[in-house]
Amino acid sequence: MERNYNIEPEIFLEPAPLLAPKLLGLELGTSLGGETSGLIVEVEAYTQDDPASHAFRGISQRNKAMFLPGGHLYVYLIYGIHHCVNIVAGPEGQGEAVLIRALEPVKGIELMKKRRATQNERLLTRGPGNLCQALGIDRKLQGVPILGEGETWLRAGIRPTADTVQFSSRIGISVAKERQWRFFIKENPFVSRA
DNA sequence: TCCCCGATTAACT
DNA sequence: GTTAATCGGGGAG
Image: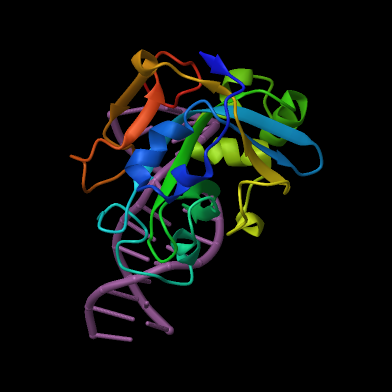
């Protein structure tokens, strides 16, 4: 574990599969009627040439935030119910992003319990839909920058050592299962699946 | 315009 | 293990 390191802004211009593991251990938070945050413990990378990616068919009204420069947010609605949040990767015009799949809660646990309607801390930010609900993230945050002093922010957290990072196929997709672009912290209880 | 189905979740049997 | 919930993107006609 390493604390108080700096986030290098250039990492967001790297391809999503390179950026994704570097996001593990960073603290993602919002200040929306109260501060809530958590350490990123599970992510997945999606690229433009990737059949599982929303960017695969090119730019559209829905996915245009994916084509912003790295370091912005791409938020989408899935199954008509749940929001999912991505951190955009790569240069402007390149449709790549990293889906945030799980956080380890840090700040605003009481507010997150209220938003999630549960007292079970383990369920607050486990899974991409759940963590958006806990942090109050929806499409009003479409395309906002993640670095800087906005109401959505990313800060240095606790950087994992290489031996605690695992990777696997991505969850819930029906194509491109051979791409092992899911990265997560070994044995972390907030990761959505073992 | 119609139709299918998804980067999910929780509540079932 | 299975299934309903509920919206909107995108391909077919």
